[in-house]
Length: 101
Image (cartoon, rainbow, N blue to C red; front, side, top):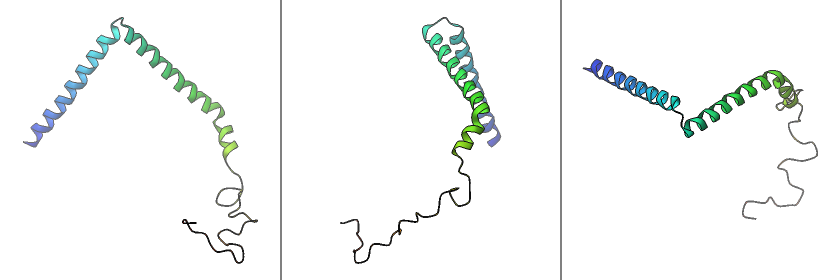
Protein backbone atom coordinates (compact mmCIF):
# COMPACT_ATOMS: atom_id res chain seq x y z
CA UNK A 1 0.00 0.00 0.00
CA UNK A 2 2.79 2.38 0.89
CA UNK A 3 4.69 1.65 -2.33
CA UNK A 4 1.75 2.77 -4.49
CA UNK A 5 1.58 6.05 -2.54
CA UNK A 6 5.30 6.62 -3.09
CA UNK A 7 4.93 5.90 -6.80
CA UNK A 8 1.93 8.24 -7.05
CA UNK A 9 3.80 10.99 -5.21
CA UNK A 10 6.87 10.62 -7.43
CA UNK A 11 4.77 10.55 -10.60
CA UNK A 12 2.99 13.76 -9.53
CA UNK A 13 6.31 15.45 -8.91
CA UNK A 14 7.63 14.27 -12.27
CA UNK A 15 4.48 15.47 -14.06
CA UNK A 16 4.68 18.86 -12.34
CA UNK A 17 8.33 19.27 -13.30
CA UNK A 18 7.67 18.21 -16.88
CA UNK A 19 4.74 20.61 -17.26
CA UNK A 20 6.79 23.45 -15.75
CA UNK A 21 9.67 22.77 -18.13
CA UNK A 22 7.38 22.60 -21.17
CA UNK A 23 5.69 25.90 -20.21
CA UNK A 24 9.09 27.46 -19.62
CA UNK A 25 10.33 26.35 -23.03
CA UNK A 26 7.17 27.68 -24.69
CA UNK A 27 7.63 31.04 -22.97
CA UNK A 28 11.36 31.04 -23.77
CA UNK A 29 10.71 30.59 -27.47
CA UNK A 30 8.08 33.34 -27.56
CA UNK A 31 9.25 36.80 -28.57
CA UNK A 32 7.66 38.47 -25.59
CA UNK A 33 8.92 41.55 -23.73
CA UNK A 34 9.00 39.85 -20.34
CA UNK A 35 10.96 36.94 -21.82
CA UNK A 36 13.45 39.40 -23.29
CA UNK A 37 13.81 41.13 -19.92
CA UNK A 38 14.24 37.74 -18.24
CA UNK A 39 16.94 36.76 -20.73
CA UNK A 40 18.79 40.03 -20.16
CA UNK A 41 18.62 39.69 -16.37
CA UNK A 42 19.63 36.04 -16.48
CA UNK A 43 22.62 36.79 -18.70
CA UNK A 44 23.61 39.68 -16.38
CA UNK A 45 23.43 37.37 -13.36
CA UNK A 46 25.51 34.68 -15.04
CA UNK A 47 28.07 37.25 -16.23
CA UNK A 48 28.33 38.74 -12.73
CA UNK A 49 28.83 35.36 -11.10
CA UNK A 50 31.53 34.42 -13.60
CA UNK A 51 33.27 37.79 -13.09
CA UNK A 52 33.18 37.35 -9.30
CA UNK A 53 34.57 33.83 -9.64
CA UNK A 54 37.50 34.94 -11.79
CA UNK A 55 38.18 38.02 -9.64
CA UNK A 56 38.28 35.87 -6.52
CA UNK A 57 40.54 33.40 -8.29
CA UNK A 58 42.98 36.18 -9.17
CA UNK A 59 42.76 38.43 -6.10
CA UNK A 60 41.41 36.08 -3.43
CA UNK A 61 44.75 35.34 -1.79
CA UNK A 62 45.64 39.04 -1.70
CA UNK A 63 42.34 39.96 -0.06
CA UNK A 64 42.66 37.11 2.41
CA UNK A 65 46.20 38.15 3.34
CA UNK A 66 45.09 41.76 3.86
CA UNK A 67 42.47 40.78 6.43
CA UNK A 68 44.20 37.84 8.07
CA UNK A 69 45.87 38.88 11.33
CA UNK A 70 49.34 37.52 11.73
CA UNK A 71 50.86 36.67 15.09
CA UNK A 72 50.07 34.81 18.28
CA UNK A 73 46.98 35.16 20.41
CA UNK A 74 43.29 34.64 20.06
CA UNK A 75 42.79 37.41 17.49
CA UNK A 76 46.14 37.24 15.79
CA UNK A 77 48.45 40.05 16.87
CA UNK A 78 45.96 41.84 19.10
CA UNK A 79 46.51 41.53 22.86
CA UNK A 80 43.97 39.76 25.03
CA UNK A 81 43.12 42.94 26.99
CA UNK A 82 44.10 46.56 26.62
CA UNK A 83 47.12 47.25 28.83
CA UNK A 84 46.11 50.81 29.82
CA UNK A 85 42.59 49.82 30.93
CA UNK A 86 41.83 47.91 34.10
CA UNK A 87 38.89 46.07 32.62
CA UNK A 88 35.90 45.94 34.97
CA UNK A 89 37.88 47.27 37.92
CA UNK A 90 36.69 50.75 38.88
CA UNK A 91 38.77 53.58 40.26
CA UNK A 92 39.31 53.56 44.04
CA UNK A 93 36.27 54.86 45.87
CA UNK A 94 33.98 55.01 42.81
CA UNK A 95 30.85 52.92 43.25
CA UNK A 96 30.14 50.49 40.41
CA UNK A 97 27.38 51.75 38.14
CA UNK A 98 24.45 49.58 37.26
CA UNK A 99 22.01 49.78 34.36
CA UNK A 100 19.69 51.92 36.49
CA UNK A 101 22.23 54.76 36.77
